[in-house]
Amino acid sequence: MKSWWVIVLCLCVVVAPAAQAKSKVWSPTVGHKQVLLWPGKAPDLKPVPGPETLTQSSGNVAGRPWMAVTNVTRPTMTVYAPKGKNTGAAVVVFPGGGFEVLAMDLEGTEVCHWLTSAGVTCVLLKYRVPSIPYRWSCNCRPHNFEVPVPALQDAQRTIRLVRAHASKWHIDPHKIGVIGFSAGGFLVAEISTQFDDRLYAPVDAADRESARPDFAMAIYPGHLADDAWKLNPNVPVSHATPPTFLVQAENDHVDGVRQALVYYTALTKAGVPAEMHLYAHGGHAFGLRRTKAPITRWPALATKWMRTIGVLAGHHAG
Image (cartoon, rainbow, N blue to C red; front, side, top):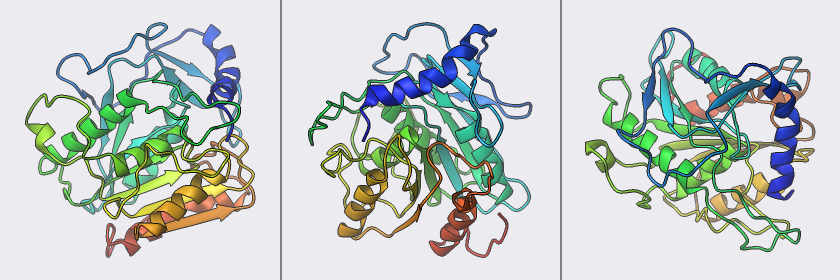
């Protein structure tokens, strides 16, 4: 795996030129309301370099730029109601960005469009970034990892809030899943394995709810393994880890194919139902944008998988 600073550098090279343009704060489209995760200041709040900023990338994916938000200190979730038939399922979305930025459209709102079209309530999480960086050494020693605690706190809180509001939002509290991309894919693995860890003091009744996802989807995940093919000890896979769906490209030169392979192996060893799709080409950070590459058809496979595990039983949209 590349060192964490290389990953962040790649992101900065893409986003930095657009920073000269007039910046603004990310907000959802009309009809969707952001909800603050914490009634007061978020726990363990860390200083950031400046105000929350939204910029357009100078690079593009599938011929279009993408939007990046950074310096998030007031994490929010935005609820997108399903279109047409409501299956009762819900998915919390973790955009990627190396824990330095969040790709809010490429790995956020565009994901919600797909999910809501399949009858799934989508909850888009704008978690805190920059977060604690990963201190990968050049040798990538097996246990040289750090946990981005603020992001995981936000993830736990979001799932608990969704469960607390399940009746109001017409959600089955036993069909709440997560999906994440790149660094967000690592956050998927963290919440799938550390859902019982108390990382913050309870703030209200919602924190009595479980933070365990009922199913998980990690798309080109990062930070899960080192160059020695050792699993990150901060994702202690067990039989309680939820069923998991993985997608990875062999030519992913940012996080590397070992990330999904090592995690998949740990899942199967623990007896966790897991499905992985490995493609020869696709690179990194392709999101859901369609190209000629076969890997961009992964959402159809994910929809079928959700039917297979009973999340979308009897539903055929998507």
